[in-house]
Image (tube, rainbow over all chains, first blue to last red; front, side, top):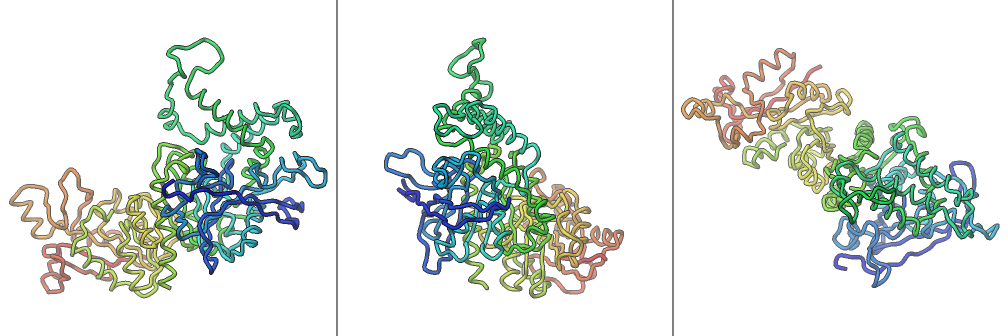
Length: 378
Length: 208
């Protein structure tokens, strides 16, 4: 557990008042699951919000107990002397609105009916999810974030932060993300949702008290997702055309190839930790996210932002390609905003943002460090 | 790209000569900014608002460590993201000779910068001429330390070449500084026969 934040626990905060969603619906109460690492200083100006990707949770670093085998999802970058250095910064991570790891979502009990919301849960957007995060930050007493960082869908939320709250963030770190999904990426999300909805056990989202859950649909959705997180090179490196525990074809429709076995395994373990309805809601929020459309143009969207940006992309990521990151960078440059950009070479596809931690550690550490120095200069 | 160029005394002279040219609080774009040494100097001494473009990831990280804004990118691809005359100065320090399309890079910098600062080693410097004349090898020196097969300097030029290029393209040269052996040279022979006596040149250029 060297360089680890050690044993951590997920905490909960309930926002009692209703929050107005982009759709017009007012919704509440909302419980937010969150974890924190490091110490909030007296000035309360060293807080960094890190935001998880599609199926992540509030457990970003450390272990939940002594026998825990796997640390939090961004443990490689959060901890003492790591990029998000917990000796210096107070790092916060929350589970997304609509999720299924502690924050109120479709699987939570609707206090009005005493039953899970299911598809009665309101459809929400990326901006709605950060409004919820902001309530928690306000309650924690944080007047301004030192930084907000996220990869993939987490990056979309991080991007929305300085747009919705221009003076609330010093800096923004956007990793392997986009200001709007390509039709190709929406297509894969659509197939994922379709596989859930077409599972008879989905039962219009009302399955929580049923014996059979839409596990087949959800695991298929996850398998499709995993294909999009890899790239051709990553698949060759990881599996090639190798067969799973055999040296000849078995002339059946069971698993032959390693890649099949991998995807099936990923699908199976996913259903134990994720809720099918949450998958529907969250992927929809991701698909709806389109800053250009919402604000007229990227320039309009970022016009009022008042933060320093760091944008990172990966050359083999075809789900959130570098070209989309460069568009954001070019817009920020045109607007004379403070922006830095790195394109990391990686054979890992979109997944690289969780795997290529060495170089990201250096980049993020330097970027975060410098605004302390920068302030001294002023 | 400056990483190919040794952190020599001459380079530091270059930096301070460029620093002298730039006004307080100017907006500066440094193409091929390397580890960000020059940008940092300009930021500290002249309080410029600066940004660098650099192709090498390690150099980009060193820029970030210095608190600079830096974009990882290839200047040979042009400066499409920049509006016309959007920077007070665009700098191309010891990088022109290692670009694939020097004329395109110059066109682009002249479009984006109100003024541009270009520096390069002079391939017609007399010691280079003697080296080639007597040894018959591709010239090497402190300024040109590479072998023919690994040099990043694929478009070496002379001061005369640059003057002719500027004339043909209607580029205005408002200032020329010559250096030899890491000293600024102002004596008459350097002005008169710069192409023979100057080891390196720094030009301030612009185009309407």
